[in-house]
Image (cartoon, rainbow, N blue to C red):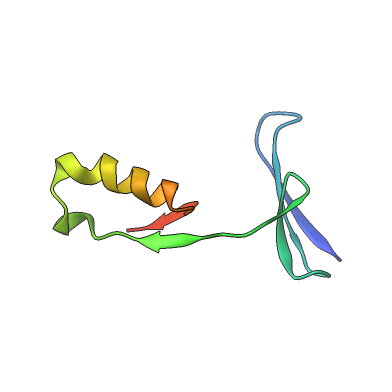
Length: 66
């Protein structure tokens, strides 16, 4: 088995798979890498949350750990 496929509920929608042969994730058939950062929301006032998440996105993160 070279990959595992996960499909959303909508027909013809996006796909996500694991390519075991090349040791990578595939998103819509293309290599995908998670780039994650961490945020301590309890240390940031609520009115700055949107700003901090936007800055994390602009820095290239595509996943956030809370």
